[in-house]
Image (cartoon, rainbow, N blue to C red; front, side, top):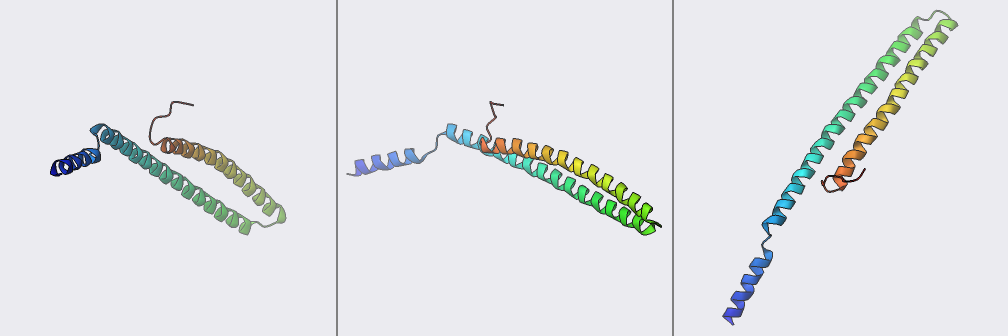
Length: 124
């Protein structure tokens, strides 16, 4: 009976050991996922920086508009100031649209890497 018990213990020990091949694959996947996480964090930091700069531009434009509007001496001057502000605002909104799509594309590419478990994509 002790022989059977020893054989059972030996079988249990060998069954719980993880083969080195599996450990290596797991290690590579974890390293890959950590690299993807690092890339995503850098990307999100860049997006945050871009959004901060956009908010700063908006504040500068509003401040400039208020200053010019306060110094307007007639209705035509105020109208001209408003048209200038609206034109600049539209330019900023167009740039926002382009930037939004660029950021979205980057996030989708990073997400594709993440959801492929860090394995390189073979498709388009």
